[in-house]
Amino acid sequence: MRNPQLNGHGELQHLLSLDGLPKSVLTAILDTAEPFTEVAEREVKKLPLLRGKSVFNVFFENSTRTRTTFEIAAKRLSADVINLNVATSSTKKGETLLDTVDNLCAMQADMFVVRHESSGAPYLIADHLHNTARHHIHVVNAGDGRHAHPTQGLLDMFTIRHYKKEFHNLVVAIVGDVLHSRVARSQIAALTTLGVPEVRVIAPKTLLPTDVERMGVRVFHDMQAGLKDVDVVMMLRLQNERMNGALLPSPQEFFKVWGLTAEKLAEARADAIVMHPGPMNRGVEIDSAVADGGQAVILPQVTFGIAVRMAVMSMLAGS
Amino acid sequence: MQLPDAESMLHTLVEQMRPNMSANTALVGIHTGGVWLAERLHAALGLSQPLGCIDVSFYRDDYGSKGLHPQPQRSGIPFDVDGTPIVIVDDVLYTGRTTRAALNELFDYGRPSRVDLAVLVDRGGRELPITARYCAHLMTEPLDCAKNLQLERDDSGQLELRLIDA
Image 1 (spheres, rainbow over the protein chains, first blue to last red):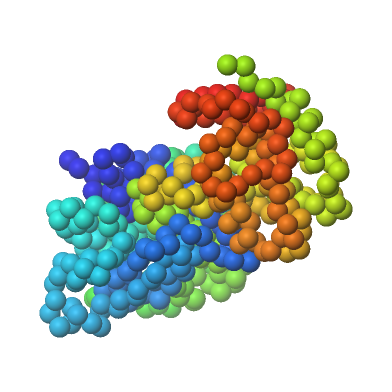
Image 2: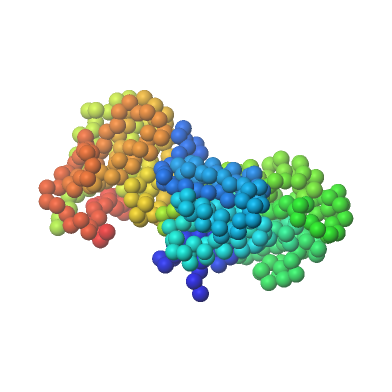
C-alpha cells in the first residue's frame, strides 16, 4: 500500500502522523531541526527557503499556540502565511472540506497546515491532492481529533534528545488524560520508533483507551509507582472541553490523585525533566511549584517547536 | 591527475593573507572543508577574533529543484559582524554559488566593513561574478564537471584534496 506521507523517492511528502514513519525519517527531522534553533539568535531571524510560497493555516478547530508557532515558523522561512479560521467561516455556510481545499488550491496554495476535530481529515486532504495530481502541495497535520499531533510529538522528541542526548537508555512516563489525547498517541509512536526501551502511561482507567497496552506501553494506575526512577515525565492536559459524562469526580479531586506535585516528582530520577504540551491547567494536572521549577522544560519545548516546524516545512517544500 | 598538495597550498595562502590582516579581521569558514581550512588559517595567522562557521544549506539557490540539503550543520558567528572586516574561507571556488549563499547568510547577521574570499583552489567554471582575493592555486585545465573537488582531513589533521564522483 502507498504510504501517503512519503513520495516515490522515500522523501517526506506530507506529515500526517508519526505512526508509520521509519526511524530514519524521524531522526532526519530532528537532525534538520537542530541548525534551525540557531536562527532565533540572529539579528535577522529569516531564511529564504520558502520565499514565494503560500502556507495556509486551515484551522477547523480553535487553537492559538499551535497556529501561532506554525505561523512564526513559516514566516521565518519567508513564506506568505494566510490564517483561515474555518470554524467561523465557509463550513458554517455549508461548504465541504474538499471544496474548501479546492478553493484554496485555486489561490495557489503550496502548503496546508490543518487542524480538524475529526480524526483523519488531513489524510482525506492529502488523498484528494494525490487523486487530483497536485503533488506540489503539501499537508501538515496540526492535530486531528483524538488521532495525531505529529509536530508536537516531534518537538517533544527534540526536547528529550536535547536534554538526555540518547533515547535507548530512557524510562519515559506519560501522565494524565491519554484517552482524549492525540499528543499522547504521537508521543508513544515516536518514543517507540526511536528506541525508548520503557514507555509508561500513568492514568485512571477511565482516561485510558481500552487497547492501550497494544501500543507497547506499561500501564500504571498509581502515580508513585509509575514515576519511580523515570528520566522524563510528560504531562498531558486534562481535556476539559472534550469531557462528556462523568469520567472524573472534579478537577480538585483529579489534582489530589493525579496532579504532578514536587512530592510525587521526587519518585523520579533527580535529573528527570518535566514536559507539558500546553496550555497548562495549573492546580489540575500540574502544581505551579513543578511547572515553574528547575526540572520543567516547558518553555524550551515551545521554542524548540518553532525550529522543528521550520525543519518539517522546509523538508516538505523541497521534496 | 596530480592534484596540488593541500598542506603546501595552505602555507601559500597564509603568506598571501598575512600582510592584509588587521587587528579585528575575522574568518568565517564554510562547512565542511572551509571550516577545517579556516581553523588552520586562524591558528597560523594568530587572529584574536573567534572563528565563525557557516552552513549555506538554508541559502542555496538549488533548494527549489534539489530540496533541502541532508544533515545541515549549525552556523555560528561568535563575534559582532557590524563593522568587522571578514574573510570567507572555502576549500574550492567553482561556480560561485556557495559564496553567494554565504554572503547572503553573513548579511543576516549584520553589516561587515568588508568581505574577502580566501580559497585553496580556484577550479574555474564560474557562473556568478565572484572572485577570490586570496587563492593558493588556479587550475587552468577544466575539470570534469561530474567530479567534485573537495578537501578531506585525516585523523592527524592533515588536509588533502580529493577528486570524487559528484
